Amino acid sequence: MVDRIVDNYAVVGNPIAQSKSPLIHTAFAAATSQPLSYERIEAPLGEFAATVDAFREAGGRGINITAPFKLDAFAYATERSERAQQAGAANALKFEGDRVIAENFDGIGLVRDLVHNLACPINGKRVLIVGAGGATRGALAPLLGESPARLVVANRTVQTALDVIAPYAAFSGVFACGLNDLGTESFDVVLNASSAGLNGQQTAISANVFAANSFAYDLTYGKGLTSFLQLAKAAGVTRLADGVGMLAEQAAEAFLWWRGVRPDTRAVIERLTVRLVVR
Ligand code: ATR
Image 1: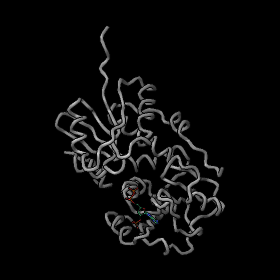
Image 2: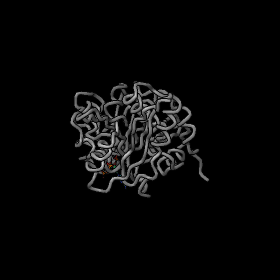
Image 3: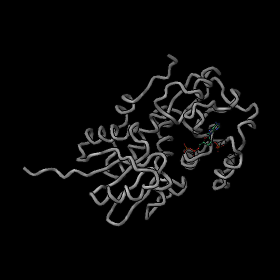
Image 4: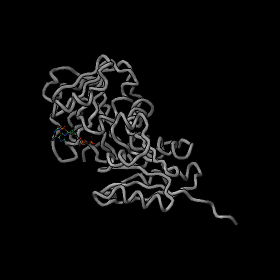
């Protein structure tokens, strides 16, 4: 009997124990009969490149990258896709001999989750993104690709929001402002890409941004009803979602890129979904 050759992949971060990527990619591999292994690697801070060098020398074919290494991964690459360049960060690398190709599937994962899984079209809608960090940078081009009527980036630090939208000056309807400058305007889709909730802090936005038929989406996952989603719910919003679908969709895009086959994400999303209820 001939052993099947197994290709090795991994997710690299620090910390890494919490990562769901091994579970997701192992499920995708089983469902598509792809011969691969997928592990977690905790790279010491400041040692991303050395850690990835060692994984490649051992035959590794590709990695996902999570905090705090998405910028290091971008710098480590020898080639960068347009999406990675727009995000200024990489969340997936592919190794082909000496070539290291960088991609970023976070934004496309978000849009795919909204449009396909949650039946929340962006086309012609008024969209608000709260936060102007790496997650927002990665999301802007894919969101604008859906032709929203208006896209506002609101951030605690106004200058960061202005910097984030600067490459999109050619798009009409793209604006930046501070969290306190939102006024009384409401939005069809409100996305939370601020890390305030993760740090146990309140997202300081006015409930005015929500209308009863708004869609509220928190890019974090597995935290149940976050302070952002609680604010939306209290404002009468019934369509609430967290980022579990975005996580599964960006993983499916990476899997397709590495293996040439796109796995179905439904089973994984169902397995990882934490119900959005107050306990
Ligand atoms: P990520 O890669 O997850 O996007 P990041 O790049 O560190 O993380 O960005 C964090 C975002 O959360 C930023 O927009 C940050 O606002 P500033 O640009 O003003 O720092 C936002 N953020 C973090 N803590 C916040 C808080 N307590 N209130 C409001 N915004 C906050």
